[in-house]
Image 1 (spheres, helix red, strand yellow):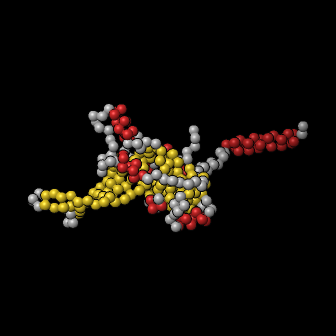
Image 2 (cartoon, one colour):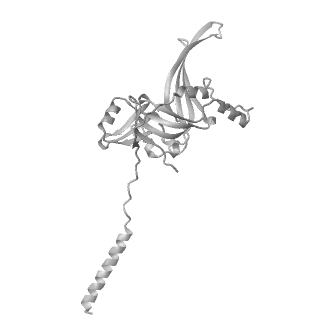
Image 3 (tube, one colour):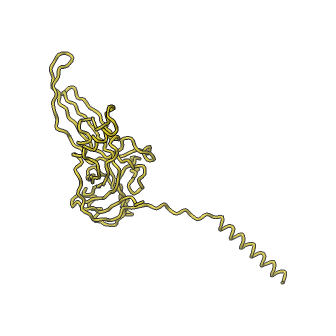
Length: 272
């Protein structure tokens, strides 16, 4: 073989080897993480009234159903079963209890509960984070007594109550049902959707869009009560704020047009 030709072939072979080795050493660009969105679904949503359920679990103000130290485990289980609250329920989170995080240019919307939780709850089960399903004022009532100076008085008591769902599986939920409001730097539960439907955006503007969740009543030993009191001694009136947390496991979520009670989007965890 001609020495010049052999030299050129060797040079091309070396360049090819270097090129192959160089390409193999360069990692492929990372793929963007998959972002899941809820699926469209039209379904009639008939929500359960949360008040009778909560009333059974919280029969007395600030005194939820709890195990008495003198109760055996079977006795407590029998008493809980007698409440008749076990099973699954569909609870609605009305528009007034929701807020919207929107990227309208890309048609991405997150319909979230108005309840926020901090980053410290993101990786662990939260202590007292709950999703508000209803809130109301109890009828005021008066109590009479005698103060330390022997003067009789009458005091009026007012109470505002919030009923919240305490999700047992919050830390295991995917991003499709967990959102972050960067304006406040906190997180919330809800449902993320992608749509170019102008009618959906219009319903959001009109405040006709809410959430619905199907949940299973969880271990009632995890019931909790939170609240505070604001006493106005001049007018002899006491205002209290009570929050009752019902432990549940999330099974399904819908975005609902509350003017028709028809669902627009739906999400449920994948079957194992």
